[in-house]
Image (cartoon, rainbow, N blue to C red; front, side, top):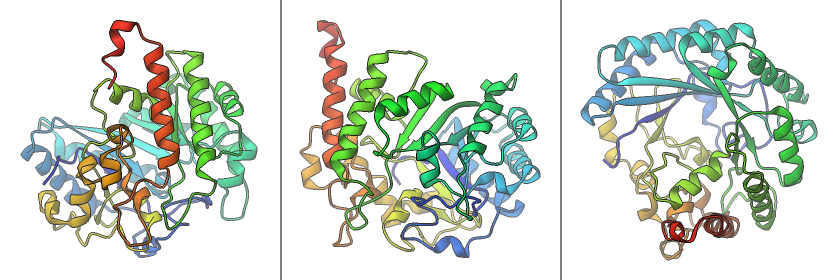
Length: 379
């Protein structure tokens, strides 16, 4: 197979208490979640942990990152989350492989007890929030149509005000909405006062188009980058931009949405089913179903699966147009965003006309900021 898998997105719950309009799990092209168990049970966790440890040992990995995900993972409950972590840690005990844990939450269910549990178990939490109330509540509503901003904002403050909150919380994730100005988004970032502010483009492709014109994403991303870069605050990070800059200097970056490196991320559903990244669900129903379950499949057996093989090709699997692009190894042509009407992924990203100018702009800004003798080091 290609690179070994070192990051596993573990679906500990396959239901959600929100009904976000852009949700790739429940509101795009894929309905297979309807057949998934609501939560991951102990027997599945036990078997998956053993398989992952086996894979780590065979490939000489020193650590494995478990990202607890959903749906909304907190719907699994405190007892089940504790049990999952205990099972994994017991399997990995004295193995020489360190299990690391994080969780991505919509932020509506967190209370003091949850925070204490995250601290006790060493789980870092990321919160999804799309901007100020009018933007966030336009997209992230519950099943009755009510906005979730107030609950999420309260959660952020609860984490920040906890004496040990900074041990487990430092970043939020926002899906880009070009209808809020980049300046207003920066003002929101200042208001919530978190260290990390990550961005995600709405999952889309050439068949199922992005909600706004591509040039809006281009202009928005460039302006937001300029606002961040010009502020020059070392304690404020945008992982999307940080990763691009790191790659320009030749540093390795482990991410599946940009860059030309083979992908080392795999999804485990509540029943143990193995899938590539959830973003593929924006393509067509059933696209992520590999017909493999970690309960009875070794991870090295995935090498022959066409979807996994293609996803692990990285930049080598891009179309001819992308192969000639100067931004190839920074953009990476994220595979789910390349799906076309011909049923193939051999196309540029649907966001190409936003990403190429963005990469060129970042390269120019970073290069201009460096001393002459250092500029030549930028890829």
